[in-house]
Length: 495
Ligand code: FAD
Ligand code: MLT
Ligand code: ZN
Image 1 (tube, rainbow, N blue to C red):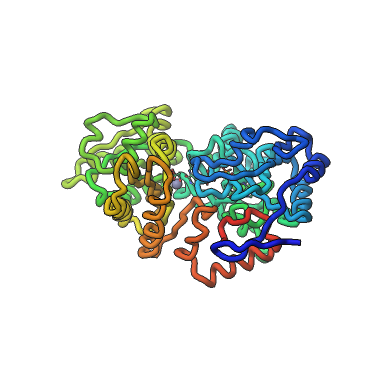
Image 2 (cartoon, protein in one colour; image 1 turned 30 degrees about the vertical axis):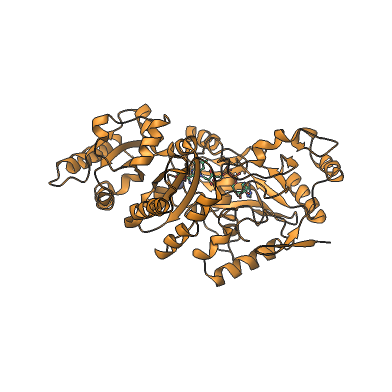
C-alpha cells in the first residue's frame, strides 16, 4: 500500500527504501559486480556511491543506498518490474553530466545506471543509421562512425562522459543543432523499458514511418520520467569534407545580430555553427586554460566574441568563402568586428572550439554556478545578462564574498543564451534573489526557461513560466498513463 506525505507543494507519495530482501532479489537478476549497495549484506561504504549521488556541478545531492548497473534490456526490465511491485522509486542515470539535477535522487531512490549497456548494435554505412545501447558514451560513438565518414548529429562539451541515452532523455541541443536540427528529428527509434517493466520496442531504422502516434517522441526530453531508454536508433550525417572555424572579436554586443545576418548571407550552406561568448566568459575560459587565447591586441576592446564554423564539401571553396567574409568584415566602412582569427590547422581548429566549449568547465572551476538556460530573442541576450547583474548589485550581492561574475554565452543560431551566475557558494540568499527574478524576465520576453538542459529537479516549480495550465495538465495525464505508481524519476520535470 502507498503512503503519502504532505509536502509544501501538495501530497506526495512515499516510496519503499531498498532493503536487504531487494538486494537478494537483484542478485537473481544481476552479477554481484553490477550491484553497488550500502545495504547489508553487500554493505559498501557510502562514499563508493558518491559519484552517482552527486551531480556534475556539486549542486544536487541524493542519498541512494543502491546503484544497479544492468548489461541487458531484459535485466533492466526485470529490475523495473520488481521495483513496481515493491513501490521502489527509480532514477535512470547516464553519464551524470546533466545540469538541472535530474540525474541524481531527491531522496534514496534506486539508481539504475546505464553505463554497462555500451554496445553498438548495428551501423549501416550506406544509410548512416546507427543503433546503439543507451549507455554508449557520445565520444565513443563519434569515434565508431568516424572511419565510415560519418559524424554524430549532436556534439557537446560533455561528450567524453555523457551517454547517447542521456542525450536523448534530455533532448540535448549542443553545438551542431544549427546544422543538424534537434534529436526529435535525428532519432529514428527507441527501445524503452516502461515503468511497469514492459519493453517497448520501437527501435526502427526507417526514415519514414507514419503509422499512428509517434510514441518515441514522448521519451525524447522526458528526462527519465516516463521510462528507461535502453537503446537508440539515430541517423548520423556524412562527415563534412572540410571544416574550418574562426573566432571574431566584436566591439559591442549590438553588432552580434547584424554579424549573424551577414555571416548567414555570405556563408549560406556551409555555415554550421554561430556561437557566442561574452567578454567575461572569454576571460574565464582563458584563465582556466580552455583553448587558445587570442593575442592581447586581438582581445583589446572586445566586448564579446563569436565563433563561426563552416562545414562543407570542398576545402578550397570553403576557405575562400571564409577569407572573403573576413576581408569584407574588416574592410567595411563601419566594421562589425575588431578582428578575426582563422584556424590554420586541426590543432588550432580544436583550440578555438575549446574556448567556447570550455566555458562550462571554466565556470565550474571559478566557483558555484547558478545556470539558467533560456530561449529569448537574440537582441535581448545582453539586456538579460546586464539586468541580472544590476538586480544582484541592487541586492548588495555582487562581490567576491557572494556573486563573483554574471556572464552569458550560448548558441546564437538557436536563440539560446546560457546565463550563468558564479558565486563563492550556493546560498539561499542568492537563490532567492535570482528566482523568480530570472524566470519573470524570461517570461516577459515570452521565452523558454529551458532551451536545452531540461527541467530536472531545478525548475519543476517554474514550469508554468513556459507552459500554460492546459499543457501542464496534459503532461501530468501522460505521466499518470505511463507511470501510474509515479516510480520513474519522481520529483523531476513535474512536481
Ligand atoms: P544524465 O546526466 O545521467 O541524465 C540526465 C537526465 O536524463 C536525467 O533526468 C536522467 O534521469 C535521464 N536519463 C539519463 N539516461 C537515461 C536513460 N537511458 N533513459 C531515461 N532517462 C535517462 N546540454 C545541452 O543540451 N547542450 C550542451 O551543449 C551541453 N553541454 C554540456 C557541457 C558540459 C561540460 C556538461 C557537464 C553538460 C552539458 N550539457 C549540455 C548538459 C546535458 O544535458 C548533458 O551533458 C547530456 O545530455 C546528459 O547526458 P548524461 O548521459 O550525462 O545524462
Ligand atoms: C554549453 O552550451 O556550453 C552547454 O549547454 C553547457 C552550459 O550551459 O554550460
Ligand atoms: Zn548549450
